[in-house]
Image (spheres, rainbow, N blue to C red):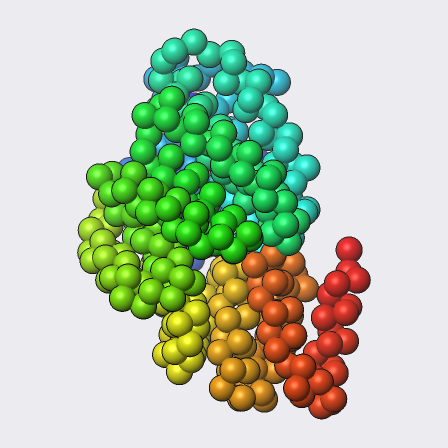
Length: 378
């Protein structure tokens, strides 16, 4: 179905004429007409309101205007398992990824597991060709997502479950000869060692392998892998190599223009991981400066922000700035009550343990009560 047909169908189903939709969105009727005719696309900030107005998800609108739901070649339009096409399954995947950073991973596992099973079955149905490649690519991406969900839902304890999914994603990527997909799976595997088993040497080897694999095709992924390699060097006490890795990552950031993985890395990521490195190296004031700046700009990525807040609290406690640390920890608990992110949860409890010298102070007792309630929540 052409874009005009699909977007107009959604508009009519929601009870809007072009005039009324334009009025609701604060644009001219001609703008809506151009969107439906495929002559222009909404600005990114218009997508969420347009999606809510026509009763669809933002991921569906993004896929529509990205070209994945119209003007497909005949061979890619076939109906598949239970009426689910690869494009429809990609919309499900995008929506799961979007929700990952905002809700507890445990609430997504069942839905993601069903989606993963559909893809696994679907991958067996297609013969070699463009559609099979699309399905296998989505299967690898979903396998990486499943690893993230399993590890996060277990509070970063189910290392074996996460590794299984990351290994599957890497195997599919090698079959497809897709170095970016393989790099992402390797990088996620490195997280299990760096932040789960605390095996910095193994984590460093995986992060550097991910950076090498991504370098020819994805500066964004290479940058992200180098940042985590820098943190591994910091864990090992090697300041010079840590700063070298961060410098290389920053150099790569100048080459992101045509990289589809650009959304994985940003100046915020550089600051977040640089702050973690300085914390590991005992450079507490530098860590505090980096982490405070990032905490102010990461409101849209709640699980990442709780990690930043946890590290920021640790840097303040180690400088004996207890009042500031308690304020930061209260913010972190506010967000953890919504997301229950495993990384943030572990760091907040680590910071609380370092408050032991002040355990009799009223504010510290109040924080402990909040943490007990957080642990008891379903």
